[in-house]
Image 1 (cartoon, rainbow, N blue to C red):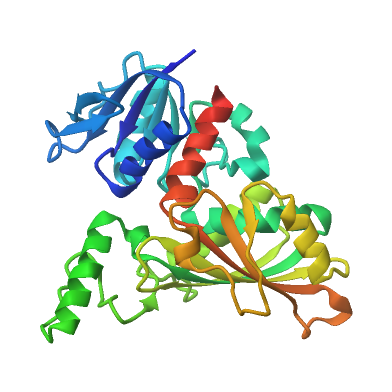
Image 2 (image 1 turned 180 degrees about the horizontal axis):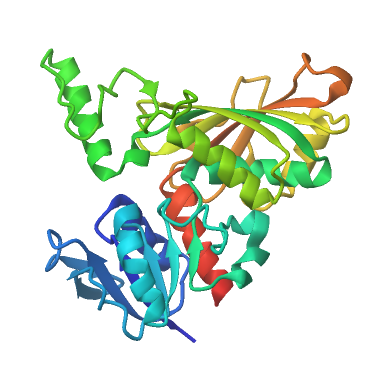
Length: 333
């Protein structure tokens, strides 16, 4: 039986991806309410043979709604998610607003789908970089507990939203034309450049993105003892994040064992062709559901064959955001 669905932030990059995935996966719904800020209210969106009018997101938007998919930013989630829950909806929130709330499940369905049942009205979608790392690392951790995890991210413009993607294209044209570069959405020039992830830096020198990956992975794995350190970087790629992941395990493990474990892991595709030096690229993962894994090799600096290096690529808008939320909604059904 179909549900009454609302999408808050429908005009954004993730909101538009929600629509594509709902159609592609034949997600069952009886009605769909499209919500956005007052700037987008009144806009028409054609979807699955019907024309919808975008409504302004307010506290009164959720009467009769069963599932509310939020991707409207942390401030709006804090303001309107409680009203949605009060109206009887289950909120799946894509912002950071509730992720570390001990009362709110933080879910990657391939890892901890059982946590969904513990919800009290709100389920949090993790950070995109966290999801993309967790999907391949968890099946390895389950087989041989991870003691330490070192992650370096190569994050696409899509992580900063549609406006950032558009601005990167504009910047590329400006650079090639020898014109001054526009930086209105992005803090710095991203075209033909890269920079430390543009989230606030804490007193310890880590930016918020790095802290999120650490804390969220501890919560999702229910394993606060894993030593995790991250370096997050924005790179001039449109919509797929890549990550270099170094793992130290409790017991010895070989690249072949890792490959065997990941070959049957849900949500993972292996692309590891050493002969042709062919490993996951953003162009492989963009628009795809799976996280792609390659460069599976022994870390020879860790004794007793307890270290492994991985290279992963995952579509930030898709698995890193919209698909993960839709998978949670499917589990709710």
